[in-house]
Image 1 (cartoon, helix red, strand yellow):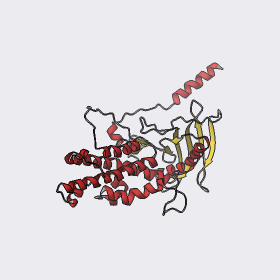
Image 2 (cartoon, helix red, strand yellow):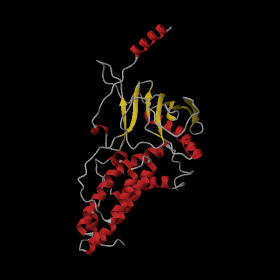
Image 3 (spheres, helix red, strand yellow):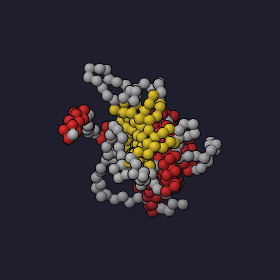
Image 4 (cartoon, one colour):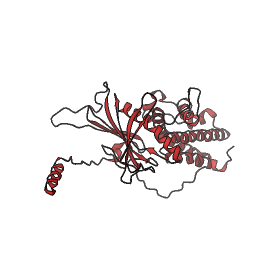
Length: 346
């Protein structure tokens, strides 16, 4: 009997697919903190390169997965072409797998909650039919988010999805979402003293950088924009008292969306817009959806479980980071020139 098991073990070892580890330069993974997707496309020697998009015209099965966390990580330290485990506070009655059904009425799907080695929910997996990875990812989120919200409400706990991954079964292509890792940096100890009002604006910026919630991040960044614009208005008034025209001062303290800014990829029409116009025309309507239960455009309650709302708020907040940095840097320079630290902000 033992000999038979030994032969089986040897046979399974021979068949095991070896794991391949690839180290990529951080610079190749995208802007630090930005949301990205890595495509794993099998290639055959001597054959033309395969299209990483696959056949996007046909509805086909996707295997989709996501680790589960108490708080989603702010960035990805590693990327794996397959399911990984997180950790939550929820035990699933010593079962290794718990089957659940969720999703909008008429669009429900079945998915599996898998326990990690500690016996708590560690990953969620589902098989969905879709014409693309984007559709598969949306279907998965729409089904799983409400279940996590119900768990959070019932047991008063934090619980969140990590970054989704999935396999296009028909095309044998794996996609794995990730957040580009942050880089370590050196600080020379230089003075960081700032005008008190800039410090207040930066406190909201830091809150936005410290969260994995797209909704809260957008709220913090929107508040940062409002505060920077109020500070700029006061600086313009001070510049006028020193002999600069209002129009010249406004122009000198303006930040515009450049053609290379990430915001243009999301909203092509915003090239050349001021940050103020971007906020009023595009950011503010999104901000209202996550700040208010009802908006003029909505017929029902706004819902943060919406996959579309989650996706657009995440993309929008990513776009704002470099623009806010440029705006704040400009106002710091202006503050130094005007010596506004000696003046009252009224």
